[in-house]
Image 1 (cartoon, rainbow, N blue to C red):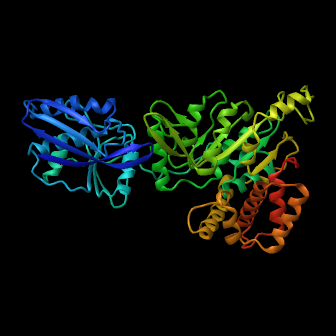
Image 2 (image 1 turned 180 degrees about the vertical axis):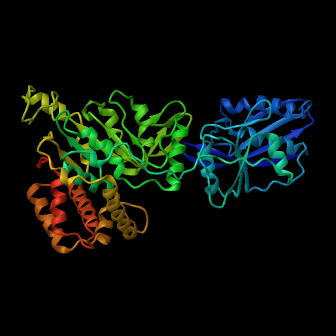
Image 3 (image 1 turned 45 degrees about the vertical axis):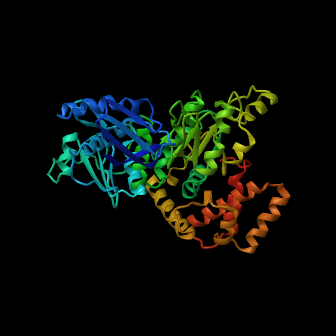
Length: 499
């Protein structure tokens, strides 16, 4: 008898339907798994045989053939243990109840019949809805937060016996994930703690509202890292789906996830390898750019990163995802992050300083700046030059809390979502979309074209200015882009003004 049980395969964060076909016949004894399984799946036959033996179902005199379809797709991970065991029991007529194709099974088996969690379990659960399952049996993992997926009934099980009892209509112990995703918002660093830098704070507010990348240049100790670390506090909190997506990526990377509700903030050291930042390995895992998905990637001392690593950021910055190709597999991970780069103005760090003397030659300064290629610099919408703040003479009255700024950011994003019809910010809008829906009047376009001809700006620079001007007008609640917003965007886009 041939039995077909439905399961889920993973390619990075993306899931696809896997049909586990099982045939058990009285023709000698053996156990074969086909369908491009990896080593962990090939070992499933030993785990499944031992599990069934412990449950009183020895496979003596039985020849078992398991086919994982689609056969041309490489399969990996122990998540097919449970559907293989269910398929064998069904093929041996030890399960009489029919199992519809809309029911999926995932889980790793222990030798005593326990069902164990596996790497990428949450990603598989999220894929169940896209595949079309309306019921999913999966392992119970108390470390996961509550999982609520519309139109999919998730049944947590701790043993093979629980699955069999539930399939036969009997009640099983109900297992609920204890962690809740409704946590209070708390940030360690707040904009109110930052003294001075009023123009830089305004620029970061614009960056948060429109998802614009920011590049900061300044001497050591001027506050670049402090501003970047406080930046997530003015970003909108993650939605429920985004929280689950964040946890899935951290789980696939084999890392403990941070505070659930906050946008992620990743700040890799400049000595980090290209694979650790971009992602990869023999079995490709998410890198820092994917762990920063829906959040912030902060590259401090950006000129110290390898040129190869920085140039590899160009694709994810443009597309919001990274595709990692290996001989054994090709996976795609989401990587839609907001990039903040920071560097010193020169190797010694004191070029243009009023307090220290720069000891670098002109050639050293130019060589230092050339470590960041032109295409990467072009990806930054906002460029800031920072100076040290005099703590004695700073204006304390201009200090706003992150919560106040975040309210304005939320309103500006709502304007953008309504304008474009879905959750997209100005920082990712195309030129045609901005002209059609951005509210640019003829006088504003003429002013930009005239200035662009005088300054010899490229098309990319003009697009950045249009995006920034639209975001500034959204923050001000303006339907149409104003001349003042355009002029402010021109200043933010260049490096002529010290902040």
